[in-house]
Length: 467
Image (cartoon, rainbow, N blue to C red; front, side):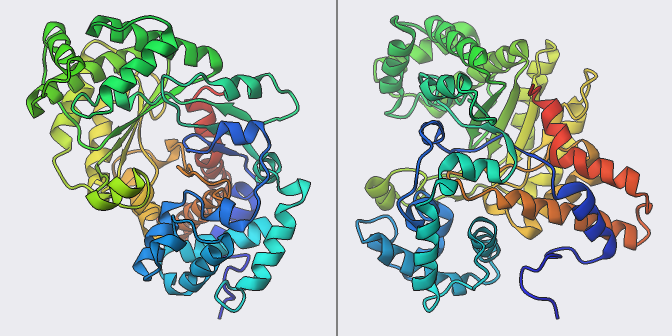
């Protein structure tokens, strides 16, 4: 019987062990999509306790605590930090079978050297030990990042952001990690939401000029994208929960924008027309800049209206969406391809049923002499599990080139999520090892090792043109 989380965790055969130890384990990390704070990186933030760094903002854990009957005051409320930690400690044994059971104990081991299982009885000692370490210089944010050999971090940033802390980090030659913004103009697309007009006002402040019509909006977005590019941005990101495609003209999109600016009602058809025209414009802009376009699709967000009104977004009340995807996405990509303006694109879906659909679809738009120009994005959010990661890799391998995959990311708001890269790398090595053991792949360590290193690091470095 194997020990829990031993050195060969998730590695079920000798080939997998050799691949992980020789080729995957020590590769640097490029975390090309996350939600951590560049301000905390620049200021080299020191967390006051384990609750702040581990539970603050982590809606993965919050969902499981609610499922375990924990009162909201101990999750997002004003309860004492130690009481919140105890509530999580009581929940952890109940998470057996959920990836958070693995992740939580991996994080305790990799960050703090703690091998004890977390539960109500071990919580007091673990609370004391972790907090003692967090109070030291070695556990400030920058050291946590370099501890895991992270080379590049791509944050997620609104076009109105000043990028103040990215600029400061860029000028700071004492920190070796590149911290790069990613352009997320979602609020520019949401003409039916009450956040649209206030956001336009913020954009006006960012560019120092009024935005009175749609053409001015497109000019403003272009100006902000070019500014982001100067700071180092090489990727955009979109939360397209549903993918719209209803062709329209510039004049029609401008008319819809005018209505939204006046606070008039926008129909669903108008919403789709506006989003279609704007997304095509953005895709062409990204292609011109040489950026990667990331499309995160099929999330059903803020399902619980009462809790959304109480806590706001990104608090653990989202789920998978199961609507139509292939037809509108194909049309959107094809319109960009028709003018040779389709940028490098990563397609993520929150619904695993879409993996084979996306893997097949992206094969229709590869080309331009770019290896893996279109990518099936890493298993994301609710798919960020052992089976989800394997399902995503197998879907890509079935109809495309797993060897050109740009690999894993954290998509996290936590500085303690880097062991997810290790988790993924172990699963990748085990998948390839199983193929070898079954005679489905050659026992050629040079071939396999090069593939492992490419997926863990090299492909992302080349794809995003990080220098």
